[in-house]
Image 1 (cartoon, rainbow, N blue to C red):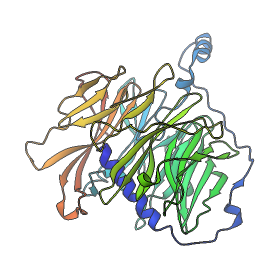
Image 2 (image 1 turned 135 degrees about the vertical axis):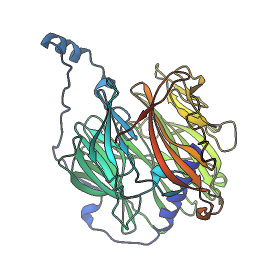
Image 3 (image 1 turned 45 degrees about the vertical axis):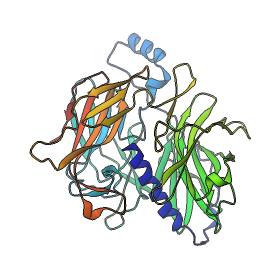
Image 4 (image 1 turned 90 degrees about the horizontal axis):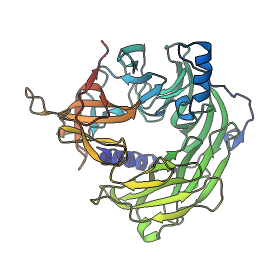
Length: 446
């Protein structure tokens, strides 16, 4: 499923690039403007029901990781003991998607709800109705989400904010959220207007920075890539292979510090006809590591995978570390991560990742060992042998795996060339302890 998702993303980028060839003029107000509005917000302190002395000790001992929202920008986002997710209800039923990637469908969800799961009590609660799709971003008590209008089903949706209790909804802008700084709530938005790509920074509902692509007829414009807590990273590429791709970084603060980090120096013959993308990012205190892939041909096959290192605070620090970052087969890539000592690691699976294998859900434990997490989670329905269960997401949050799975059937009449299509007829949500041979808990809200 991971490989198919990457192919689907690459196809979407190709379609967007081909539509970006026209030259348009935009107002000078949109070109690299910076504002120094003081819209800083302070994170609200949170305490448990203890005596005043106990509260003081707890606050002094709190670690940095405990203060931050966990898995922000995922499909399951945690704050304190609450894990939030979107229950699509019956909104996906009957939808058709290539490769069965139903969560990528840009659609206004009619019956969806934002739900919460209490880690302590295992209670699932419906917080409010929501018509958005895609990832969830949370800062303090406010979600930042995305939806599309009926008849305008595109990836660049309407970004809006809404409180965790469903109140105070505000429409903000149109685009796609790339990253959010957990300390100040500044988030980067990729937008596309009249044939021009923009990278914008927003803080709450205020535009604080905007960078316009200086494109010409050769430029393929921005390619969304990766993020750290403090930066959003993106690539710029050209159609005619006359230049190497460029790595750029924009700092997620109110000043919008934009830096061209360096050129991706890869042999031009390897770059010929290929589309570059950053598919993984790992970072420690001083260094950022990323895997750049090249895909090409009608099947968008993997032509190359490269590991780079960069210090975003030092100009000219971009360097190639490894050209052999592929996995066991031609289409797989090794995963990268930072271990507890701050060192870069690479391997077939990173700790606390999960994937489906036949009818089972597998995972990689903290020591890098692959194990059976939950047997027969995707077992076939004996009453309908034509149906299959397709994992959509498996995210490690608050010490457990939260999983979205869709019931599906092949829909050959909707195939596009070699790309198989599937139709959804049911969606399920699970919480599974991160232990070998665990039993799933079905998350359900009536």
